[in-house]
Amino acid sequence: MLGCVSHIPEVQDWQWDLAVRMREGIEQVYASRPDEVECVRAMVNAIDGAKPVTVNLDKRASFNLIAEAAFLHGSQSQVQFRVGSEEYSRELADLLVLATYVEDGGLKFQRACFIQTKRSRQSEKHAAFRYSIDPWQLALLSSFPEFRGLSGVFADLEVRLWNRSGMLGAYGLLSPPGEIVIVSAIVLNQVLGGRKSFTAKELVPAILSESAASRGSVHLPCECCWFDPQQCPYCHELLAYLLRHYGTFPRSVLSAAVGNSEASVTTCMGLDEFVRCWTGLRLGEVWRADSVTLSERVLRGTLHAAVRRVSSATGKLAEVRKLLDSVSGNDNLRFDGENPQAHDGGLGVLSVVVSREGWAHQTA
Image (cartoon, rainbow, N blue to C red; front, top):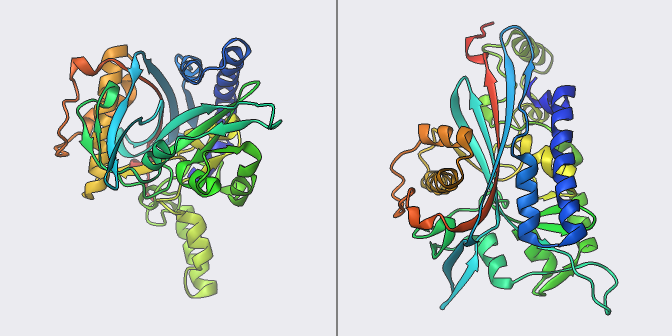
């Protein structure tokens, strides 16, 4: 039921329109000035103003998907962190990607991914496009040591985040004429093996190792998955059939029904796949509104503060800000989320909100 939302024609057309908008924006930048920040700005401009899509599955239930975007002009959002006995200062990211799931008006969970974009370069020695990676920024986006914001959106923030999914930090690898490959910083660290540059073809094994089936569908945690035998008569009938014929519930069927609530794709082989995974709730670290786990509350507070700063400075991201405001709490962050002096940070934000309405009132 829910797992098939991304296969509905209206949703596919909406995702395709977003990808076309973003690709055209990147192509225009690359044709004149292949700059990472300008490419991020182009992606944001392409999404900003996109129309939402509503899918009515029956008379009592529907899905609504809304995409928002904002670009905060200014200096890089620099943070300071320690690796061993040495301190380093690096940009945390130039793009923050958010995907939020809402059920009957209440925020249930959100995924987040900090992405640093890199453009390809060619040299006389190497015919293939190469990407250069700073090892300390890679360490930051891989393991997220405790850091303190020095400037930009994250100024004055002191926090340590837990990269459980392996996709809290990633790189966006830009290439002409207007393509982008997304790869987990952890995966990229393994590909590099201590080197400071690589070619795109070295990522092929990592990309192909992920099942294509795991990339395209709307992905919900177990408590809000499509299999609900207590309220859904079709699920109840399926469960009864399996119990009659197998005497138990086969693990393979259970896995297919509920999925892995922590799982995230770690690579997206192109812009189209990035849009599908992002809007399909398949990309990034997850936190839940009802979680009491400290790491999830800290991530929530960090994202809430960043969104408030970008939103108040740009007047955008109203939908996701409203949702984060509704679940805000005391996350013990030494951070003023409305500090006007911090509105001088260069950061792009892409946000999608997937809302499910009507399920709470359905009964068997």
